[in-house]
Length: 207
Ligand SMILES: [Cu+2]
Image (cartoon, rainbow, N blue to C red; front, side, top):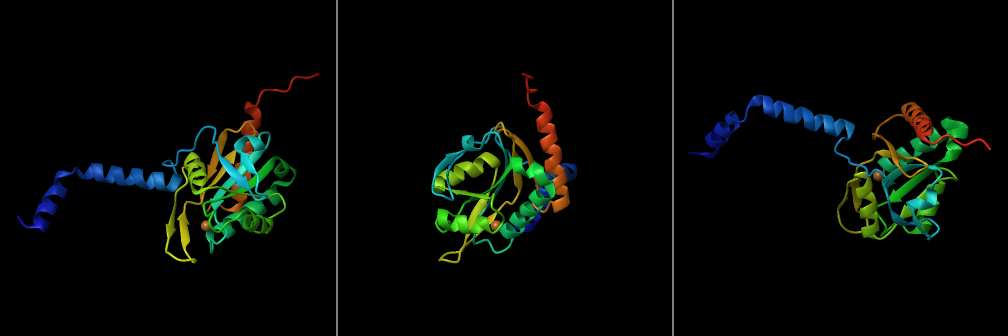
């Protein structure tokens, strides 16, 4: 039996409806990021742009807007970080409760000093974090972030997912904003998510 006939017969055995369903499922996952599993309370141990070791606990009490990227990224990271900076401006006083964070998966080039220079381009409140390759991989896994080095030599690039994650003041994951979400949608989404989280926080006890 020659291969094309064999392949054709095998394909006819698979019910077409199953193929269509699988394809639809894949596209849905791809579009909405259902495949990304974010830890309920994401944890990490990294180094900040001052060279200090920090964990997620250092940020309790504030919202975290987390983006994974690297400073040599030619396009997607600067675009996303510019959008985050713009969103924070639009949120006004609400943004005081938010710490925007870039976690770099390129520690070989993104030293704390390089990260400090880079995040400053987007605003004074931005925090840059990185760590050993193992620490960065562990942090990325908490958010379902995927990345892959492409090319050799000094000019390698890194393919990566580019979603934005919101973590609440209690350290719990709140929301994922898909790559490509525009600034007004992001602003509304973050403001709405913050309201929702506030409602679930224990009411303050009057003194
Ligand atoms: Cu990038």
